[in-house]
Image 1 (cartoon, helix red, strand yellow):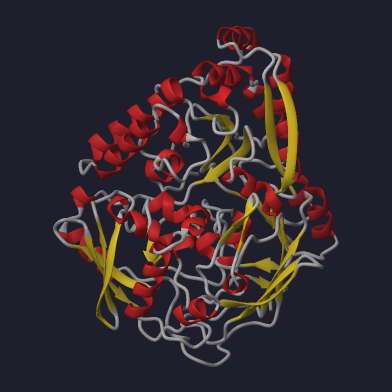
Image 2 (cartoon, rainbow, N blue to C red):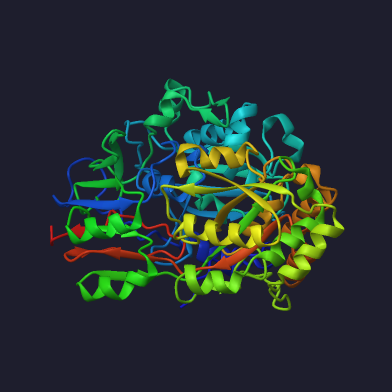
Length: 558
């Protein structure tokens, strides 16, 4: 089963298509909006999370464990239909572009308030976008999703996709971009671009981000962000490793069917299974593929998602100049026995990657073949590059499982052994996912690192565009690579191509160049992740984007 999110090409935005967009309605009905308790249940849904949230301001978040929490609290102008990757209205009821495709008029939902009681309206929308656009130097590094979508910030406004926001009236706002793009407004469904209370952000000095060591110090607001969603944050108990959300009884749409959602942070996957068996949690993500049948036999429900992701080995020539040599990067690629890795470490249905995006995305190059495992040739390339016996600081995350990376330690061990077999000295570094690892990647602390990506929408711009489209905001040292400016410029050109066939062809060519000429990162595999819930849990809808919402979940019929 394959789910795809289609970004509508500007070239085919007909009057009929616009009419359909304008008439689209969210599945969140307004019949129970306003104050009061609504029809919410009394149960608590406890979910076993693999890692701790990084912040409670989604604008600075970059990882799935944080978004799993913030997704329940915040909403965007554009939403995603449950169980699919299709765009649907959320805080905006409809939207349409002008003839140039650069000015988009959004008609906002009325009667919506932030959970602090502040009204959601056109003024709030513009304040959100101006807040996101106007970041200090450290905030620009932390706000990766803005960089990956709009590109630049206010201090480099001429380079940004974002142009401005104009209030027409209380429920009408015009968002302007500098060029037409296949990804806008689809990417407004990203959690990082959710709407937040301007009053709360001002009070908590939301933009006061400061770099500290390999990470960042975040302002007071980031500990208790305020959105419009079906839940609010009740408590983050770091000592007991739990995050508790409570139902927002003033939510504009259908009230949550449970009174509370608790995220219990259990980094070890086998421990999560034990807790599910003991009924101390009601579900968890990324069960070990070897356990799927046993979990189902015990009466649990295992929902398998499609493999809308890529697992990769990142290489950083800023930290290790030897990695600036294409021969060295190719040698490392050929040293990895990826077929064996897929067979022994990844779930059934996983495949060896030929490029940095899955085959369901438009622009995937079907002609590319997987780089073959050849340690002899890898040794020869290292010798030719004068890199025999080179050292590599190779990092992996602890206290986490990801859809593309179910057991980081075992994957790292297998890959490190392959590298040592061709004479590379591997210096192992590991840090907790949200306890230094992600910040270390952003701060260029490692020569090589394990990471991956689950797509946000069906667009090459969301995969290779996100990875390599910015010279400043990337983890691969592209500013130090001779091909960096060319690659970034070609990605921008492809994304702005109006004709769909031409755009697809451009991305296919870029995928070939990335694999054969540039190789800034090494695509490893694609894996189908799963989600499991226990007996008595109803209403869970698995998302191909791993973007489940929990407001429709009940436990034990309550």
